[in-house]
Length: 143
Image 1: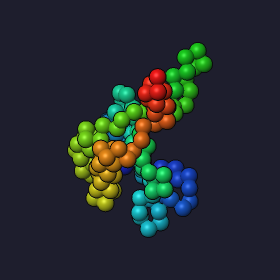
Image 2: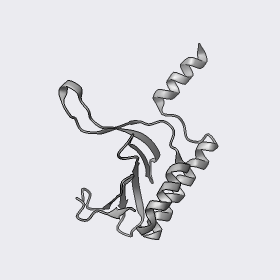
Image 3: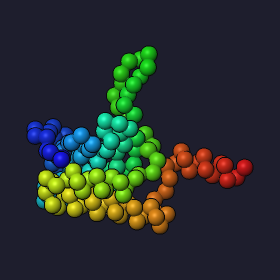
Image 4: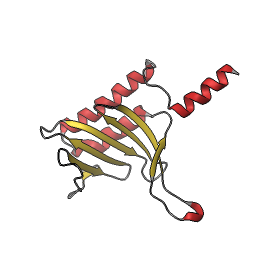
């Protein structure tokens, strides 16, 4: 069950950042002064092959894999987001429904609606593949 982490560092004075966590998810939300969600990042499979589904009101959707920062001979480096392939929105949405019971209804419903919106947009072909994969696909098609 997602629980809120208290005392989250606030980096932007105009936004209220909140963080929720359980064994499968990390959820970060950014809210405007009126409480509206401006952005969120839902990290899932955090103890396995962690990925992040993000939405921002001005930039739309992103889906990334979290590179854990294993630097090899350089040692441990900071984790970073890299192109993450298709977002398994149905599986994540089902799992989120179970975990999000303690979230306020507005936040839970908003994030669930965004996952549905992503799925519908993807099915209509409105969400493009990441550039790297699109370039490889176009190159294969032209050969």
